[in-house]
Image (cartoon, rainbow, N blue to C red; front, side, top):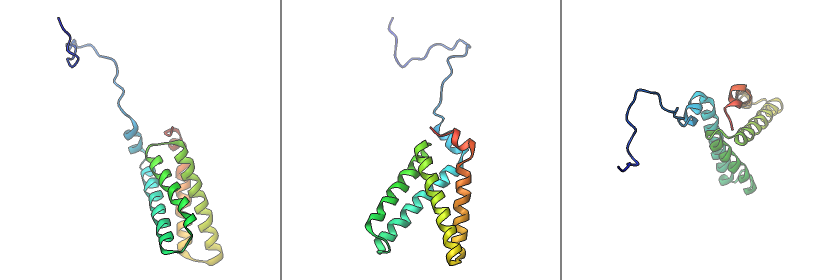
Length: 133
């Protein structure tokens, strides 16, 4: 009697061992803000590259888009180091935009600063941090 590797045991009506499904997409879908944060980090990277291409900033500034892309893609994989990188970027941008608003009184800086502050507050939530690894 030979055993086929692709055959299944006969159905006996007894429950089998629990099957652990891949829960990564399920975790990510429960936290849609992480997907939005990932898209935001990619958008920041694109804007930074455009600034370098236009000559507004030096070529050394290309370090930031590399970090932004790494943080954005790492957030999709629910990695803790990407969360920390995104948190640092959002906190620094919030401070920079709010400082820019206080010195230059440009309304767009206030909006961007408050938006980054909302992103920061989302990222420090307990349910977001406990789903990262």
